[in-house]
Image (tube, rainbow, N blue to C red; front, side, top):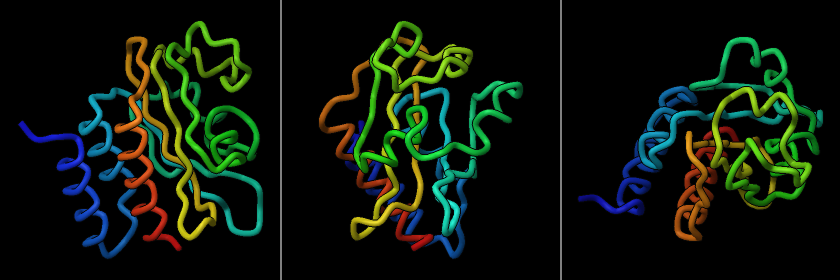
Length: 157
């Protein structure tokens, strides 16, 4: 059985070999690596503080208008972008930390994490993934997800 690190290394190679940003493919592969059902990739719109949705899996259609543009500092994606670090909740349905926007509970996911797409300290967007059950991502998983996000950021840097 392949380790998470080996799976991530394969995905990073796929991203590196891509001649263009294949957000949907990369998101699908990321979800498979981490056993997640739902995910989003947002990129930072040049010259703004707006994260624009590039790819999504498992997000109900009625939520897409709320998620298509996310200001930095709002919701998990916006806070991960603002802090330039991973933001996670073990159970999105019961979270009261203030990082989860009310509409996010409609996704019906529980364990969720969003990491910034960073390259050389500069923000390029966010990558968020989630599971249908309560889940705390391990330090190893967070590290792997951050490496993956960096490889995505390099493609748009």
